[in-house]
Image: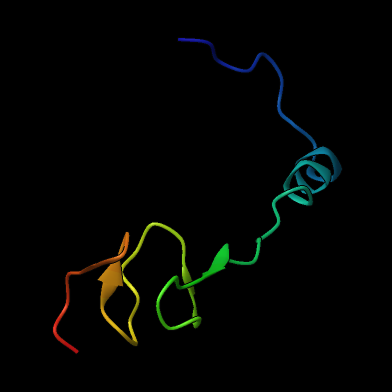
Length: 57
């Protein structure tokens, strides 16, 4: 397993960590109720996923 040969300086560490950014969630519109929802999840308002009813709302 590789191990760093030298200590990484504080400025190098902070500049590397400055690239970590949060991203907004990928919202898509529901096919049945046209509400915004997370992709690849069941719609929390109507309870459908892939045009099928999967949740009782």
